[in-house]
Image (cartoon, rainbow, N blue to C red):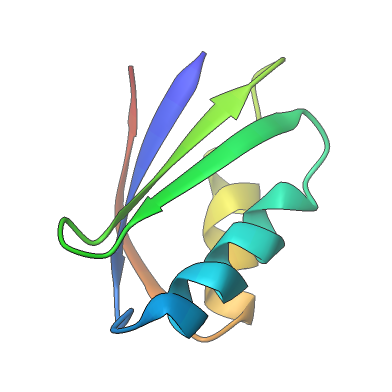
Length: 71
């Protein structure tokens, strides 16, 4: 399962690293790919993770989640 998270406020590689680290610490997140141009993070999950948990992880490091889409 994959989810795409739309994120506002990221502007550099450091931002992408903070988001990657925050999402990577969540149980059942196997891989995180942040795209600065598209302002998204794609997470690959071994089991479903609640959208609220993903949103809070990103917000805790200073960014705003505008949408989460399951694909």
